[in-house]
Length: 80
Image (cartoon, rainbow, N blue to C red):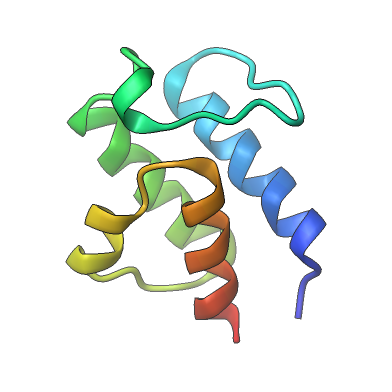
């Protein structure tokens, strides 16, 4: 199992790629406050996470994953 720090770094990097902008370590980012994080970018980000971690996210996961912490937590839960 990957460590939380490693998963968090990959999640941050994938979101940065989806948004097309860097995300600094420690930057707390959420969908409601980030104009670039629209529904299309959210889907792109979710698909990147599935591919990167070899997991399958459900629609409920997509809806709940609205900030970096919740994304990291859901990926960790999927990885078991």
